[in-house]
Length: 171
Image 1 (cartoon, rainbow, N blue to C red):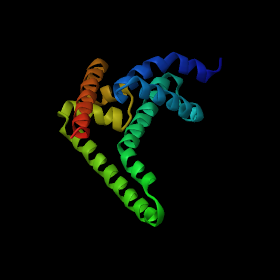
Image 2 (spheres, rainbow, N blue to C red; image 1 turned 120 degrees about the horizontal axis):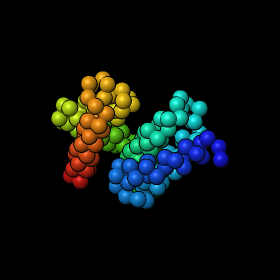
Image 3 (cartoon, rainbow, N blue to C red; image 1 turned 30 degrees about the horizontal axis):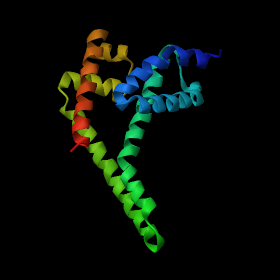
């Protein structure tokens, strides 16, 4: 068994369980994990320390999950594009592209707003860990808190973010 297979076998279950929470269902979590493993395999040369494999794989999987959610949000627009026929097709494609860009911009604004609305202790941890992608130890050291406190705050911050994002998407 090669190095990648050992690492993947060791960490895939933990990342899968995390993706169930992030993606919201087992089917998407499975798809995300498979895609994340493929991306990790292709980019294994970028991994500096094998001890960080799980967090690295989880970051990749989080990005894949967000891309999947973004694609799902844009699916109705893409279906409209497929229904277009004849001469108006090119014009419709341009307007869909513009609409898709507006939707993406709106999503970014809503995400930024959700981060800003987090209580300061949670926002600090969330920004450092999930946005700046610092390790848990680095975040704890930088904020002068224990690793356990950092993990607790991060868990609460992520839960609040999921709640705010879900509320935004169901409006």
